[in-house]
Image 1: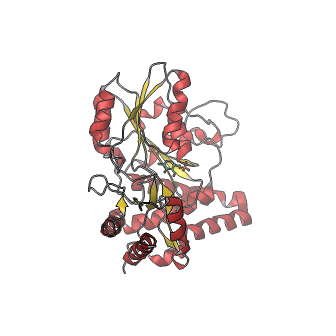
Image 2: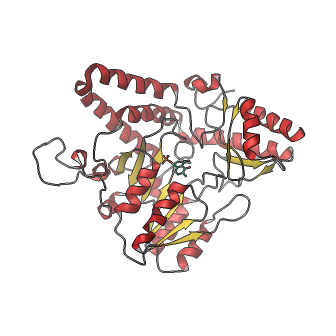
Image 3: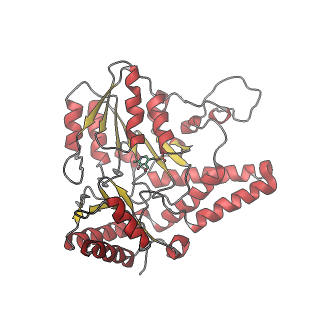
Amino acid sequence: MDTPLDRSDFPVTGHWNYLNHAGTAPPSGPAVEAMHRCAVESSEGASVAFPAHDTRAEEIRAAMARLMGVPTGDVAFVKNTTEGLGFVANGLTWAPGDRVVVPDLEFPSTLYPWLALRDQGVVVDLVPTSGPGRTLPVDAYARVVAAGPAPRVVAASWVQFGRGWRTDLPALAQVCADAGALLCADIIQGLGVVPADLDAWGVDFAMADAHKWLLGPLGVGVLYVRGSVLDRLRPLEPGWASVAHREDWDNRELVWAAGARRLEGGSANVTGIHAMGASVDLLLATGVDRVWAHVSALCERMREGLAAGGVTVLSDGSAAGRSGIVTFSVDGVDPVLLSAALRAEGIVCAPRAGGVRASPHGYNTTDDIDALLAAVAAVTRS
Ligand SMILES: Cc1ncc(COP(=O)(O)O)c(C=O)c1O
């Protein structure tokens, strides 16, 4: 079948029916080539290669900005999502009694930076998720926001890692704006598969790593900081790369670089950035809207097929809340064992949130989904 992303760019297709992009995605072939090229050029020329590598990194910053729908100057490279969250949580200045609102079911890195602020007197209030999909309609946030003093920050993942609920970020941004709160969105489980327009949506901070839906390597990511709130964020790692007078080695002044670059203190993971950029180029050339239409259809096929076979689909399938994640459980079968049984059939999923989580991307086919359905049916029958 025709897939929006070319299967020949994904060597993993020769080895596995890979349905774990919400876990760790296989970097694309072009990403690996870019990484290799960058490493070879560094090995052959080091500082001689650096200017060209830096120029390419700036092109990639612009590509990341396009993908997120934000100005290029508002994007910083970070080592991962967790670092981006830490830069926000610890870069803001807190006073005892300040309030943060976070969902009650989040990936640890989306929750812990806020819990860690409790030692500064920050109050963290949790928004209750509900139902098997662990859904979080914006009304649920609005109720918690309204139940106390105006929060300083509302923090949430765009797409919840376990069962895949997708939060309506524009609507949540409106709730935040009405309350005078900043919105910090962990977008790692959406960026690259769901079209994003963060600036227009009113998001203030967002972060993602390359190793999931961006089809890049581990250990490199991006942080978006809305230009108008940048000055509220204290750079946590000031260094040679954070300043306007970068590479003016004898300058003893501290004049921050314009834009989010001031958050980048030292040498960047250039090979990682180049690899991420190669995959992001694939996504932009294809169009994330096409990828999303395809992944949505694969997930719909999965939900319908699983339900028809008597399997419990835990993920919400509504148009508003669906994502690239479908989590399901089979009565009486441990998800860890079910996941292992699928792996033995060449299908890679992950046990998460009380079920097995499947997360296809733009190069997966309906055959991949049908193979999963057949393998689950075989386990259910046995
Ligand atoms: C929602 C969410 N946030 C953060 C992370 C961790 O990302 P990183 O390793 O880039 O810090 C994950 C990883 O699964 C995640 O699902």
